[in-house]
Length: 113
Length: 116
Image 1 (cartoon, rainbow over the protein chains, first blue to last red):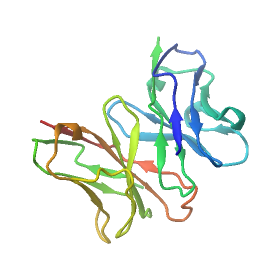
Image 2 (cartoon, rainbow over the protein chains, first blue to last red; image 1 turned 180 degrees about the horizontal axis):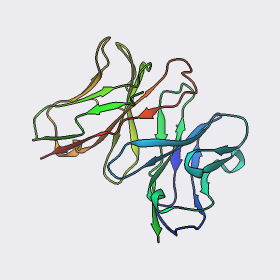
Image 3 (cartoon, rainbow over the protein chains, first blue to last red; image 1 turned 135 degrees about the vertical axis):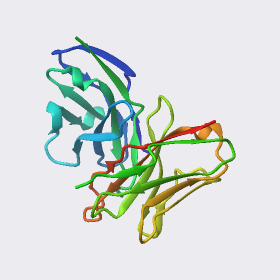
Image 4 (cartoon, rainbow over the protein chains, first blue to last red; image 1 turned 90 degrees about the vertical axis):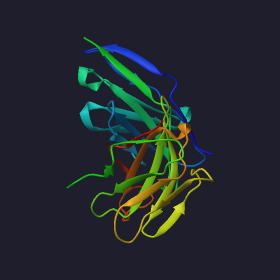
């Protein structure tokens, strides 16, 4: 069965600092990997996705993620965080049939001025 | 191009009542997914539907919950005889049928159900 672990429940960074959110997955085949962001009271917005090819994926809002098969990881990064990035971030893995996403528990990001 | 629409955005029910949650997929999308998010948790898959067919309901509770996606109209998630543990945010997502194995799911804003 597929699973996703986001080890950090809360992270606080200063505005302008770099950010890395960790995601580890368990899946038997080549995974389809996603990062979504959820602002308070809102739905999920797709930041980026990995299906195949280049292991460094660029997304919206200046985010990127790197797929590392050897570490079963898909960490999300941003070189300089803005106050508007404060939100909850979810990593997800999709099954081969493309019909079910398994989400991690989420990481809540707070940004200090 | 409107995104995924869900209504109502907030729903309050008393224990024992029925809750009906509606989801209209993005234009051109015929695959619909329902997820539940309990407080302080991630989203959990419930059901995957195509028009007039339930494809995968492995995440649906065995009792009181049902889902449909009729030929015309929105997808409906129905919860009968609600209990306090049903209080959660319910998200709908849709995707295009053109690339079923790799296509992205786009999420609606969710319906927040509160059971008193």
